[in-house]
Image 1: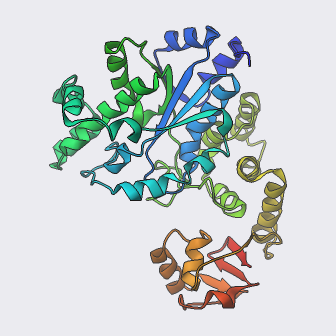
Image 2 (image 1 turned 180 degrees about the vertical axis):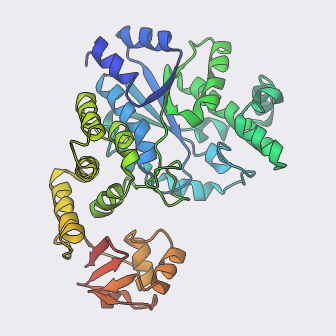
Length: 397
């Protein structure tokens, strides 16, 4: 497959949704060279489900893959055991290896909704860190100073607030940098919150005789609240593996101020069309609701297909504009023994704790009738519609 080196493609790649490029001249030279580049991106499996905040980077990786480059997708199954301290106000705690492995299992399937996994090189950093000796780690750490690590804004904020900083947290950027050495990374694509970590790789690669990687740092996607970074812990996320109806409904709930950001970062609508929609919104030539419907349909199409996206849209119109029950309800075969287990299994709630809260709030219905008993036998739900809140519906089979 020939490498796409056209100026138009490269210009759009380095502008759409991009916050910063380090070093731009070097990136452009590499992309114009016609060489098949190794594009690194790493993620620590801290939860089982990915959300659209991650997809911002994955869409850029998809574009690079289409241009003919090799995507090296690194699952940080070693580094996830103690976790990236980025944006964390308190010290990270160590996690069990089995817990991390369980979270990592579904990543390839989720990533495969965006990338061509047959053309993606998937690696795990436990392959080298589980073999690294104590002496090897100390030699690696000796290449950096504590002062350099403490330059990170979030460490300074912790110190000012009197919060502890664990020694293991200072090592994290070093390990992330060494990942790039092991993978021979030419370019890495990350969110802006990872720029400091990835900058550490450049020094290490030069020391190891490699050309230093360049960095494409993407804008951060705000959550459905329109203010804070999208996060599962904050509950303002849209999951990649959520149902079509749930994705559609959540995207319709974002504030108007976030529409253009979402269109740019998580859809495949052309930049020209987004510019036109931006102009129409500014001049009140189009209803923001209609643009959000376009956004929601585009995103659902990526993860569930055009037919399902059309059904989700029609169901949303019936339920929220015409106030009729949805005509399209996903059918799911369940294994759980009780109502609350089924609610978690079908992802109507994120946890049993949330499920209990929804039951206490009278927000759970079975065939339209309110239910408050979470121990209700699952076999009594078969063939019935289970509803949680206003827009979450599944039919139990």
